[in-house]
Image (tube, rainbow, N blue to C red; front, top):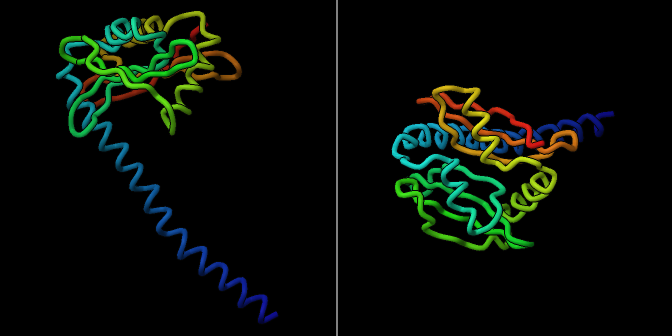
Length: 177
């Protein structure tokens, strides 16, 4: 009995020692997300180009499968993932001029995993992402679209559209069928 109690106490102690750093790491990730959102909300007014315009500008590089404004190295960036055949690219659209400033192949890691998932959702879509962005903006007057990411929900394609209005940010879902 004592050996069992001692073993249980030892396991519980090890668990508590390991759980604290993990909980702090999760909290730190949440703080990073909040800081990223806050920084993005502050920088969005710099953009002269809308998310819809970026989707249009990237069309010559392939079919758009997602797009987002993001803060990269302290600067506002407008990124569109595209696919052409079986190849994926990240297109950087200048948020001032609307011109494609960089095109880079997506060949691995989390970006490739995300692109494959987005391709799967867009394969079932009957509407382009631009239509989902337009519908979200029509239903949410005064907001600016900051991201659009397709996904499958119960086997049906939907677009998660991120919207910003000042410091307020929210995500709405639009059907792609």
